[in-house]
Image (cartoon, rainbow, N blue to C red; front, side):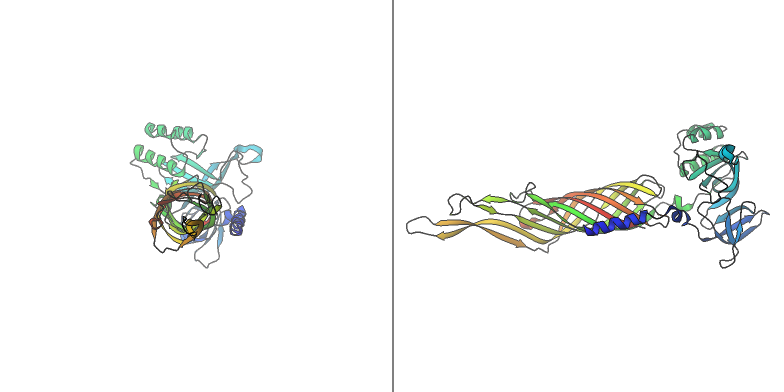
Length: 431
C-alpha cells in the first residue's frame, strides 16, 4: 500500500506543474527562415513561442549569434525546418466591444495554401494589448479564406454554415461542409477537395506537418502498482471458488503503444510480471466411525504463482488535449510457474487393532507442498480505464484501473484448469 501511495503522490506532483511552464515548454531555438518586410529570405535560428502573436520571434543568422526581436511589422512570413510555416494575416478580433480592437495583425500557421486556405492560430497572446475574446472557448482557433477575401473564423458552433457560404461556388464540396468533423485534418481535407475539385488549374499545397499524417507513432511506457488476485480449481471440492479468498501482490511491466497521431484508436503490445496468490479456507468434519469423528479438520490450502503475461490491447482515447481519458480491451496470453502450492488432505491413521475386533482409525490432516518448475501456458483477457496527462515535454504520467480474467493450465496437480480474476491499480510514465 505504501508503494501505491508514493506513486499517487508522484502523479499529483506532476499534475500540479504550472500552466505557464507548460505553455512555454516549446520555446526553443529552431532552424528556419524569415521572409522580411522587403521580401528577402534569411536563414538562421529562431526562438518561436508556443503562442505566435504580435509579440513576434527572435532571429539570428547563426546559432550563436545575438538574436534580434522581430514583430509583425518586420516579417511577412517565417518557417521552421519541421515544415511549419507562419504567415502574417489580419484576423477579426473582439468586435470593437469594451475597447478591444476590431482586428489584429498576427502570425498564423498556414495549413492549406491555395484558392482556399486554412490557418491555425493559438490563442492566449503574449502581448496584453490583445485581450482574450470572451466568445473564444478554445486556445486553438481556425480561420479560412477564399481568394483575397477577409479571414473567416471557423468556430465549433457555426463552422458548417460558415464553410458552406464560403465555398458556395463549389456546390459539391459546400454540401459536405455541414457534415464535416470539426478537427484540423477534416477541415484541411475539405478545403483541399475544394481546391482540387473546382480550382484544379490553380496552384495549391498541403502545409500540414508531415508528423500529423505519419502512418504510425510509437509511445513506450513503464508502469507498476498493486494487484488483487483470485484463483480456484474447477475440480477440487476444497479449492473451488466459494472457498477461495483473494491475495495481494505487485505488478510491473512495460508497453509499446502504436497508432496514428490524429486517431483515437491505437494498439498496445506489452509485457507484465506479477504474482497471483489465493487461500482456500475449507473445514471438513472427520468421518463417522473414527476416534475423532465430527472433529473439524482444517484443510485450508494456498497457491502462489509467478505470472508473465503479454497483453495485446486496443485503446480508444478521448481527445488530444492535456487530459486524455482512455479505455482498452484485449487478450492476454502468457505463462505461469508455481512458486508454492500447499494442498491439505485427510488420511486414515490406524491407532489400534484389538484382538478379535476391527481396527480403530483416526483421521489426520496431511499437507503436500509442490514447487514445480514446469512452465504452463495461460490465456485470458483484460479491460482497462485510465487517464493520461500529455505534458508538453512528451512525457505523459498515467494512472489505470485494470481487470483481468482467464485460465491457468496446470495439469500436474490433477485438478483441471485454474481460473483467475484480478484487479489492479497502476501508475506509470509514457514517453
